[in-house]
Length: 295
Ligand code: HEM
Image (tube, rainbow, N blue to C red; front, side, top):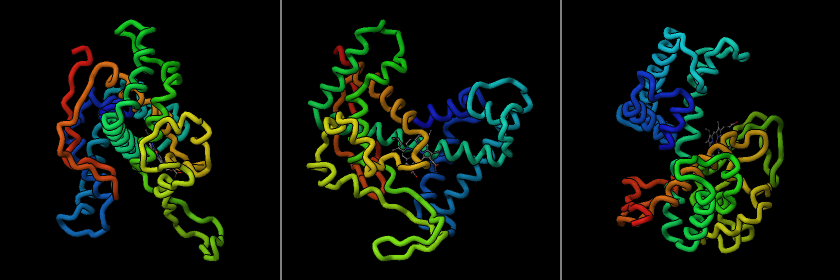
């Protein structure tokens, strides 16, 4: 769902020649490749990642060619990037790089947080009850076919808290990358100018001084809005490079949760393995039995 939603916003993919399934296969190779040891030998995830990237580039080049040939105006991100009115005048290579970056950053974060929210809500019925109450109250003011809007999203206080608590406990981005612009000293160590630094932010999320009882799923702690703006809250990074997709990601997950909890109940089929480190994932999927809420 998250990948298709991104593809649709970026390049209205469902109306183009790119078919989602092969795209998804190649994209997953690329994702695995970026998280692998850099050993460039046949059969390694690293080599497969490069191959996946090459194939994705071919598909996107073809899409750009088709767009140019058809001369139709498209109201999506690719349409804006290709438009003559775009003042940045990016090369095709740069446009393709942008698309891959946004797909990469916006897909796994949203899909994995959604999955983990479903998991935590299943395991914490009180939190689920409160969340459902919030969403049913929104539905009560609407006709069944009415979509949710920006004001509804803004009113979802508990939902936002659930998303932050899920992201804290199931940390998807383990750290942020930075480069020193000058020599600097930290705790007696010299970090020379130009060094690339990986700031490992993951453990901060489990610090019992900052988050009492840190291993407990407690979305209520985020109802104190000041928690989000503490300088130790780096779930979405920090400073000028803070995640530009933060609010979009929260809106996507909130929308998913809205329809999921107002329409369905679910139980786990069981036995699925979940890992939290080095990557949050359910290697075989998180299997649920879903039934209509009214039944
Ligand atoms: C739950 C959802 C998400 C989480 C937890 C998340 C987390 C992060 C983190 C920690 C960073 C590094 C920030 C830094 O260096 O300070 C980042 C960067 C980024 N994110 Fe997100 N993200 C999410 C959703 C999204 C979405 C939906 C998009 C776009 C559609 C997106 C696009 C990006 C981009 C383009 C960057 C690189 C920004 C830069 O280097 O200037 N993210 N994200």
